[in-house]
Image (tube, rainbow, N blue to C red; front, side, top):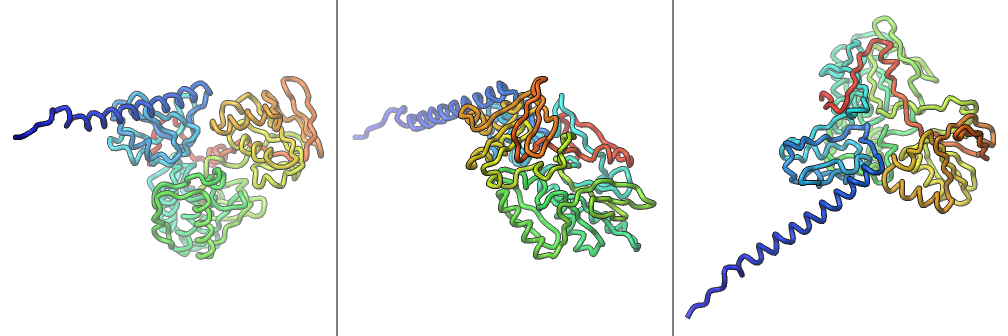
Length: 436
């Protein structure tokens, strides 16, 4: 005698699995949709750094890009990939590599906010012979790409060098592209100098928040060889840079900013506050943060005025003014406000301090304002910086604040005017893919 089970018993596990999948998928989509709506409501713009644009005609909603993004900037809405939190994106490019149907392009700028990118040859030389650009300034924010461009530019410079009393190349910047170029120049036996306006390695990476994932793919460096790691934090990467600089004996002139770049005969003169360098070639390996933007007000030259937060503890029991409306300003104010005895004030030109920073920073800032740990002046400008006070113009009224220290987080200025002055051609990109 034999017994047979109804067919539905065999289909039940499949049905239950499908139901579980659909419920989880719907829950995830609702979460992503809510994040997107919050982004729209807060008025957060697309990032000015390298960021993804999704071709919805090609996107199949696999979710591979969402899983690959270490910053959780992407989500699936309507079965299509969407940049749900653009303020989280820092241009890793892992999403582009993960997409199985090539529906993602990495671009600079948006339809409304253009970004200037210098014209470059495949050798990374500009239209001005002897001026080279590698890394983020040239339209490539990915670390591994910057590393590759830095050494490839040096390869071209090496082929074109000739004997003379001047340097073969001055490398401006000690971020990924600049470090790679310095290693390549040493390996090639070139006469070179590397200058860095900050007092540390890493370029824009140094400004990342703690434990931020800084790289998502291996890279190959001159002298060092393959660095075979797929994910590495800011701290780990900076420690790695420091180690190889020490091991290879490369000298980097820190706290030395390029003030001017002038044509001189067949070469150039790079002037800094500390020296002048005569060179055949110049490699600009700077990021898009550029030189810190100053306010241009009386008293700004005082030592108490700085342009980035290094150590919040040094401001204990002090009256501190933070100027700016982005994440850097919010994070600086929050860090200082957490220290004992501090009085923290933020001044920003508009009201963007409550919309522009990342969601986490915005919520913490609102809480600190409610608890009166931080005071915020919107629609305000700094008029004058005194020895122990600072004067603001707040909606037409003068406000005098007690002040011991001031941190200006007003972004940076790129050397675009300087480049144009010596003839480097610059294109403006409005959400277009930059040639690689």
